[in-house]
Image 1 (cartoon, rainbow, N blue to C red):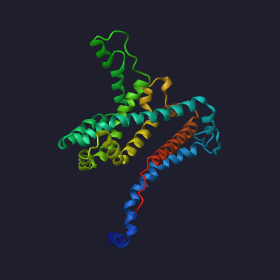
Image 2 (image 1 turned 90 degrees about the vertical axis):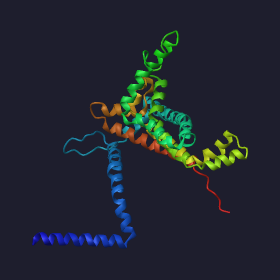
Image 3 (image 1 turned 90 degrees about the horizontal axis):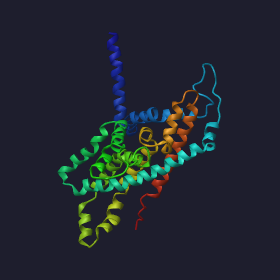
Image 4 (image 1 turned 180 degrees about the vertical axis):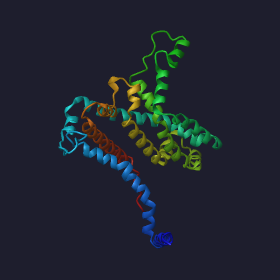
Length: 308
C-alpha cells in the first residue's frame, strides 16, 4: 500500500510537470536550456571563477583554519618582470601571424574541397584532412620532430638529391614552431571555411564569369564577402587555440620561443606556493585574448544594410 501511494504521488508530480510544459512556452524553454546552461556554469565558468578568486590570494592552498590574505602583487608582478611582458607580447604577435598564415594556406584547400572537387569525393577529402587529428597533439609534435631533425626526413631527402653542406637547422626555432602550429590548427580553420564556401551558390560565380569578371575579381567581390562568417569563425578559433598552446611550443620551439601559456604551465608546475601567480597570469591571458578577438570581430563585422 505504501508503495502504491509513493507511485501515485510521483505520477501526480509527473502529470503536473507535463501539463505545465504543455501550457507554458517559457517552461519548455527553461527545460530545454537547463542542461546546457548548467554545463556552461559548472564545467566552464566555475573553474575560471575559482581561478580568479585564487589569483588574489597571498598563498594557496590555505592552511587549515586560516583565512586568505588578499593581495594584488601577483598582477603587479606581471608588469614588473620584462620576461613575462616579452613572452606575453610575443605570444600575441605569433598567434596573429600563425592565424593569418593558416588562413592563407587553408583557404585554397577549403575552396578546392568545397567547389573544385567532385561532390562525391568531398566527404573523403575531408576525412583525409581530419584523420591526423584522431591522435594527440603530443604524438603529432614528435612526428614533426622526426621530420625536421638533422637526420630527419627533410634533411635526408636533401642529402639524397645531392644537397651539400651541413643539415638545415629546422628544429627548436620559429620554423619548427610555425610548421607545427600550422599543422595543429589547420582543421579549425578548414571546417568553418569549407562550411561557408560550400554554401555559396555556383550560379553566382558562373554569372560573374559570364559578365567578364576575372578570377581575382570574383574572389574579392563575391567569394570573400560571402565567406566572411567562415573567415571570422576560423580565425577566432585558430587564434584562441594558438594563444593557449602549451605542449607544442615546449616540444618544437626553443628557449627563445617560449609562449606565455607555456610559462604559465611552468609556474603551476613549480613546487611551493605558485598557484596564485599562475592563476593571475591565466586571467590576464584570458581577458586579453577575449578583448583581442572582440576587436577583431568588430572590425570584420558585416556592414549593416540600409533599408530603402
